[in-house]
Length: 394
Image (cartoon, rainbow, N blue to C red; front, side, top):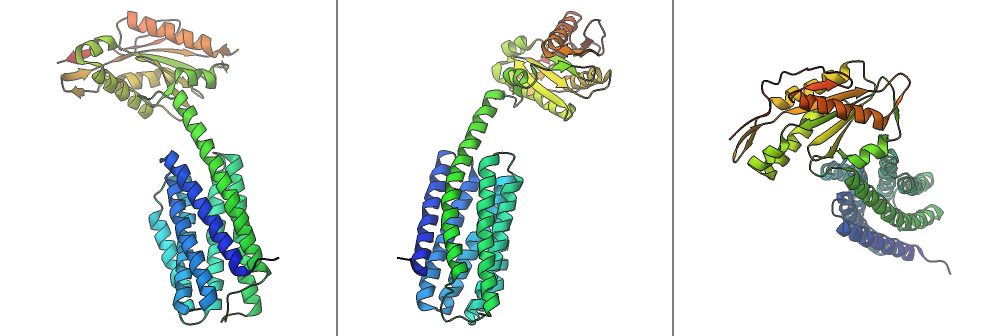
């Protein structure tokens, strides 16, 4: 036996409630995914709107219709805002509030003055636009997790299409004033697609959560927690098998007398020095560079698309920037320095590990020659005077 329209509406409300509970549970397990909580709020508004619209179908009261319209428009506005939050990280409430106000102002008065058919046309058109916009936002972000985000985009777009069909039916029949809620093939298709869409979006949201969680764990495994730079494992996973030509260079850097800084001022001060040096690397390096903390106080930088001599100048910039720092600590002021060794690939191509070893050997020469200087692999080439060799004062 076919379900009547109101039963289908209740089934849609139940499906939305199940999705809301699923998303809330997912958010509880990882609260950094704040867009999930935004979706929970959106679904709470949408479910309230569906239930109120179901009551409206029984009583056809103007105020009840306006309330249902407002709740649904609020819910769909927040759904769209959640997709923007997912893609950009921007807090969604200003966008959601503005969209809700505009869409409610456009159609709620029609529901109040008896032009409920026109109000439903506006609601369906606005919903179709918001859901299509939601599909677009997830589609633009699909490179992060192609399978779940593409699936979500398709489901939101399908739902948007059925809302557009509902509006088209009302316009085609000239139903500007209704004695009962619309009940036609487009409305039934809309509810069926929305029920299926809720189920699919719930499953894909769980898949997306797992995808992001796995990516988060992988980032943690490849990132140095203190400085935020890549770690040694990440460097070798990404570049260890490469053959470097003359346009690629490796700089290996080591903070001078770091052990004595730890011994004199404590490890907390040493951590501040390491973080300060990582900041200087970020400030100097360009987008064709990969900065890594190899371990302890040793760092490495891989630079691609670099002109001859440029890597040496970059290393010099880093040294001068770091030497000008005054790190104020509770037990005194620390003015650390760093030494660097630079090696480049060859015309015929050199294995990554070979170039790294050459840069490390050049670093050793810089240390032996007095520290706070840059040396090129293969010959001594002081760049920075060592007059201010690792100045520390208590």
